[in-house]
Image (cartoon, rainbow, N blue to C red; front, top):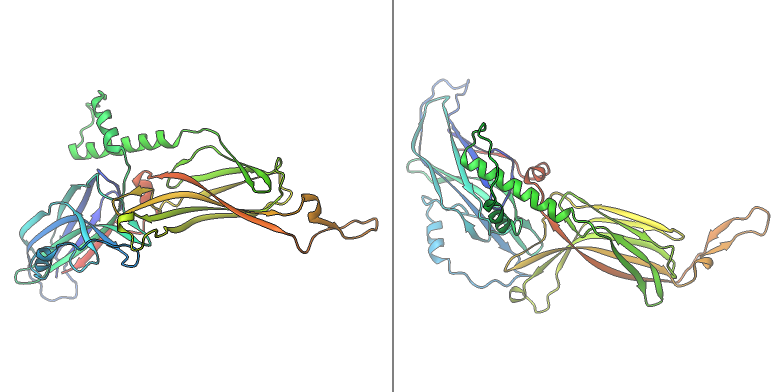
Length: 387
């Protein structure tokens, strides 16, 4: 028996273009209860990264793929196929790397191997939507002599920051000071440089603030104004906005604000022409606001959510969805006097005529530092199997 343990050194979330590093340890455990132990042999071990794509048949019409040659190989259990037995199709993969050949482990002995690979910068982000899924995995294949291949899969999350490649090229042209007292491996230095560039680019994109004012009105008149200071955010940030109802002609009884994503299939891949998008709500604020002059809301963008993106098959966009309930009467008639005595009690009317209307405000949501996103990731940094 051999235990195989794979550990991602920095966490299970990466930016496209970063270097993924994984330490794979092979151990022949020495059990205290066993009376005899022997050496164990592995013929070889290999590792490869792939992105698996799966689409809902009810929503997405994909062209038939010619995978006959690949399917024949997949039937052979002695061929290393990282996505063997998984749904969907492999749309992206890195070249396989051999970790070792002919490994012998004595009882209690273990050996570790480091796997490093640069994640393709032009790949899709990790995404689990209602119509499509993009899932990244590192697969380690191991085989004993004359035995089927055993696969250890290490799922991880990929964030894509568009424009990073061009931004990196422009920054590389500049002369940057170096520290001669620090010795870094070339791969780690490049990886750190890419993360620093991404952080800088995100800071520049999301720190710009300017006042955006919108008039809220329906067919009967003005309800109020809405104010927001920026429309570009990172996942993990809060979307903050304020309302001013003091200058409105129509009283607002209640409002709600929802932070939503719209998942839309590109027209050529739609199952039905004019197919509507799928909406998901990530946060919601609702408030009764009759006779309220000003109000505000704060909606957190979950770190586990997917930033906006577009591929040849699907696009994901973010928006704020507003719903307003307004009175069909003037604000003064919404209350009635309950008694003519000295003690005056004011009570609300039992029935009131209302109007409802909605409004959508598009916003842009970008990735964040992958280390920060790792704290809430559903994936584990450590995975293991026993052969």
